[in-house]
Image 1 (cartoon, one colour):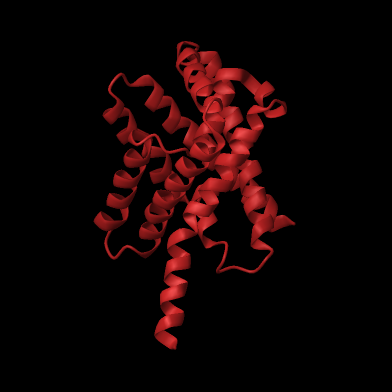
Image 2 (cartoon, one colour; image 1 turned 90 degrees about the vertical axis):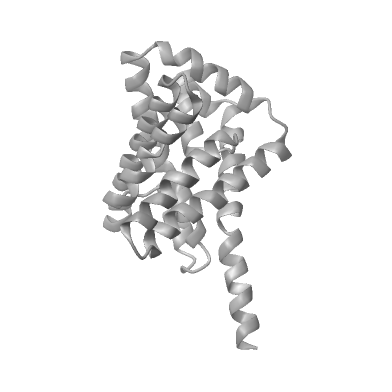
Length: 212
């Protein structure tokens, strides 16, 4: 229980940092610049060892079943962290609320299959960024993965469930959590997990073929 409480706190911190990334993205008129600086969130999370749902989802298969519970704890912590940051930014930067509202409207109107596929693509890129950071042979390689993958998923319009939590909090306050909008976030979360598992499944398949 103590370990899961620690994970929950680290997940709150990660949610806050994703909120920071989302804030700078909304603050930039130039989408490319905003996407690039959004990467600060994942940069900080990886360096400080914070717990991000989309960063851990790809390791579901290589861990014991209890890891699924840990992943849920991380998701909830990220929800709290993005909520805290969303409330703060709503108070100090109310001008960003209008931009967040536009994102909320667009995201909640997407067909379910479209939303799932966009989230899967984001999950794939997040796994590449985080796993490359873990395995990178040099600092340049580690950080290059972050500052390539994050802007790419943003500029492509792929769906990051935790970033979207932040945009939803900023746009609608806490009310979206008890509205149909929560279904959108749950769908994005599922897509992120499926996308993050794509490369690990390919790697597992290749390993088994090599053994046979």
